[in-house]
Every structure is written in structure tokens, then in C-alpha cells.
Image (cartoon, rainbow, N blue to C red):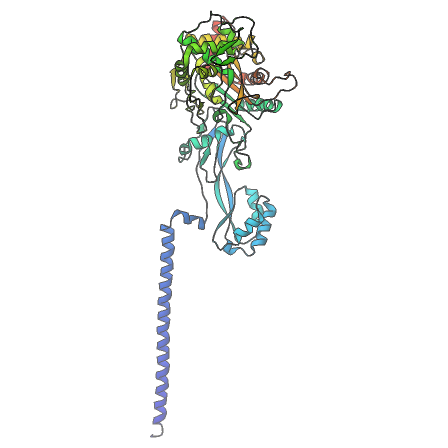
Length: 559
């Protein structure tokens, strides 16, 4: 019995050691589980915090589907000018890209616009997300997908698309990559376009007219080797801009691919001394203020001096001329005599009333202020009367002439289609009698004066040529011209006014060395009227004395 005692004691000791080890292990396991659960809890809390409370700029770390609503833009007939499509944008997670150089080279092979060096540098960054390229089509996306490269992913985004391309690009404008309006009507009514489920926005433009004007203006610009060209077609009764063209133009789908000059809207932003197209306004001022009448003869055949300057006529008359003759022959001398009677104060009053001393109040931000002389003395009054010394936009001049012929009512121009919610705003600038006088005087310019090449049968075109020397070195450069022709039709009941302007046209075969408006701007305007006239309601002229036809035209125009 005594020999077994020590063995039992040793056995109990072993059992106690094993029990202690097991107990210690269990404690460690519990501690580990607690630590694990604590870390897991912290991770869950952090994920919840990121999901619920992270600022918006963190969203780019995990791009998904972005649907940005933007309403369509149409012309007056419902033709689509701008719409929104779903496209794919390619991005990378550089930390997951296996080989930045090979990935960059593979992408550049199918997307040649990508720069390999820049792309490799992007893919080598220690970042979770970088943009590669945005606005891919489904076919382009599939080609990238088939590369099977790790770290490349796609995000579905909205993209603004312009199915008409460069046609009316300066008026429609374009958006940036984030679908915010940058230019044109896209910028002007950006808030309206981005309202959720907003209906499409209808412009006053007629794409049929816009296309015809663009084609004829482009042909003229090429033929006469002009630097740029512009045209405005305006419904003088409603103030709606039916067409506005500026050349050179650009494709709003890729606005960055063209020069800033191409994106410049010459019709509403470029200011010019427009020359003798101002003369009808001077005649209207004189008749309105009753400082001259239709019967008086002005001695334009004699040299005429104002202060220290001799007034020059390109084709001096051999006989005195009445007001209609002064306008038809485009006499600077006769216009100067009339302007001196009006005086600087009344001239400024009328020009301000016609909107020519301020920017045109149109929806587009691209509407320039005129360039006005600091000193408006007698010489300025004279030169401004025939279009030198006051630089305005073609849109401003067309609006003013339209007001003069619209029974003397100025209508605020618009690029939006008129509606009950968007009625025209008018003010009287001349009496109806003065307006009627100018209607006949401007018709005479086309039938018997400097605008004969714009006389298109059936439309009773009224008009006035304008040739102005461009300012240079404190004076004027006689070799660098801006030529214009302002046209209005029909004579029986004026509704449409149009201005065509060419910047530095050159003499060509058939113009006998001349580069003046009668040889380039006037025939261009005539070709445009011939093409667009059949498309425009109320454009055809009624025969003189045919009261029933005039009534029918007015009824058609009111529709």
C-alpha cells in the first residue's frame, strides 16, 4: 500500500496541469472571439458610416449607373436638335491593374485618341479610381471588354447628342461632360432643361430654312473668299428668329475638336460698321421728325464738306435726288445732309429706341454690346447716318430694320417659339405712315438701285446694300471691307427681314474688280430668298391693287 502512494500523487499532478492548459486555451479563444467581433463590429459601423454619411465626392470611388435627365430641344416643327442617350464611360482601378504598360498599349491600340504615356502614368498611380474615357458607344465598350484586362470597368452615363451636327450649332449650343449647358440655348435655359420630366423645348428656328441659308451662305463665303459670314432671318411680326447662321461653324458633339473662332457666333456677337444698311433708318428718322420730305431735292451732285471732311460718293449722281433717290443710289452726301437736320440728340434717341445702343435682349448669352463713340458730335452724327462709327451686330441691325417696316413696331426678338406663355413684347418706334414710306423706298432700291441682284420674282423684295471699310490704325482700310444686304419681303405686307454679311470678300471673276455689297451680299440674299420663300407662310407678294390677295396673305401670315 505504501509503495503506490507516490504514483497516485504524480498522476493527479499531471491531470491538474492538463486542466490548466485547457482552461488557458479556452480563455484565449474567448479573447480572440471578442477581439474578432469587436473588429467586425468596427468594420460594419465604418461601412454604414461611409454608405449613409459619406460626402458626394466619395461616390466616384465606386462608380455605378448615372442617369442625368435633360429635356430634348426641337425646332418649331418638332425636328429633334438635341437629345440625351445612355453611353458607357471607361474607368480603371489602378491597384488592380496587373501591368500598366501593357494595359495602356492594348487600350491605345483600339482607342487611338488615348495617349499611351499619359495612360500608363494614370494606371501606375496608387489609387482606387481614375477616368480613362467617357461617352463610349455599345460597340466601343464591347471592344474594350473583349480585351479581358483586369482593373478596367464601365459606368453607364447620360450623354448629350446633337443629331443635326453643325446645323444651328451656335443657337443650340452644347453641354460639358457633366451635362451642364455651356453655350447657346443649352446654357440659356439650363435650369428648365434639367427639371425632372420637363417637356421638350421648342425653338423658333425652322431647320429647312436653316439648312438652305447655311448652304447658300457657305457657297458665297467660298466663292468670294470671305473670312467669315453670317445671316439672320427674322419674322418681324412675332420677333421669332427663323434662322441664324454663322460661318465657320462647328459640331457640338465634339466642340473641343474645332477652333474657338468656329464656335464664335458672328450673327449675334461680332460687331461691325455695317455701312449703308443704316441709311433706311436715317430716312425714317427724318420723316418721323419731319425735318425732310419726299418732295425735296438734295444737291448731291455737288461736293459736300462737313467740318474738315469731304463726303464722298462711290458713284456720284449728276442730278439732285429726292429721299427715295438718295436711298436707291446710296448717296452718302444726301444722307449726310439729312443727318445734319436730325441732329445728334434725336439721332441717339431713335437709335436707342431701335435697340442699337445696347445688346439685343435675346435669350442667348452670346449677344454683344455695340461699340459706341465716346464723342458724338456733328461728324459722328454724319458718319453714323451711313453706317460708319457705330459698330453693331447683324442681329441688332436686322431687328431694327424689321421694326421700321413692321408698321413702326419694335418686337423683342427671340429664339424660342412664341406661345401664349411667351407672347411678343412690342413698342412703337416709328409711325405707321413712316413705315409705309420706307417700304416703298426700299423696294425702289431693289428694282432701280444698288440691290437689283436681289430682286426675286414673286416676293417683292425690299432691301439696301451696305459696304463698309474696316477700322485700322485710327482710320479705315479701303481694301478690307464688310459687305451686307438687308432684305425684307413681301412688299405687299412685310413679314420677314433678313441680313446677309460677308467679312472681307474678295473680287472674283464676273465682279469686274469690285468687292462691294451689290456684287456679293445682294446676289447671295437673292438666292436665299428664292430658296426659303416657298417654305415660309405669308412670304409671297401680292400684285399691286389686288386687295383680296393682300387680305389672303395677311390671313395666312396670322396662322
